[in-house]
Image (cartoon, rainbow, N blue to C red):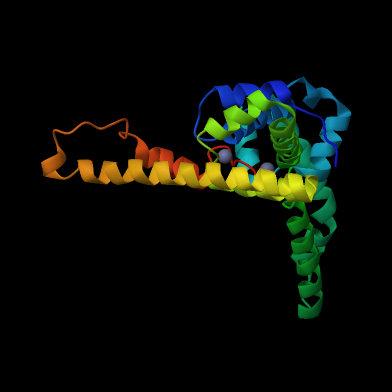
Length: 240
Ligand SMILES: [Zn+2]
Ligand SMILES: [Zn+2]
């Protein structure tokens, strides 16, 4: 397995000292993908054809809508609607005058299947998935090729549970036995330490609400509840 390395963004994300560097990278990837489809590329017929064919998932239609470019959203949704009308128009027209139940069921089935297909794909999800694969690949590659990165990885706060799963999966895809064991062992150490630290912090937060602890210091645990939610859900998980 060989993918394009993304060394600089990966290093930057680890240097940011966040709860999950992959979440940070994926947030940027989400912004880039949305601005691509709402930027000048909308004027290119190939992009519009791509959007007509595949479209976006509900989450990313909302991201596209929130991009602030009303003209781009209008162009994209207009051609997407036209394509949808082309695919369903005949069946819808026939249905409006059809009286035989068997025919109605058949045509209704046709419309449903077209609509299901229309809501299946997402160009933003696809772009983000591609980028995610490259980031996961880069992290594992740097872990073996760059001793400074390995130390940074081991001293990091680990990853959200969602991206921890991704690293486990990618390691299995790209590493042979001995390297696989080595990476998984270290990922397990980082993950266990991260969970233990978080659990301790959130526990202290619960204790701080007891009256006998009111005067004791927070020890940096004021936002442990929100960091725990980030670790469990993954803030950058804006894709399917
Ligand atoms: Zn994450
Ligand atoms: Zn999507």
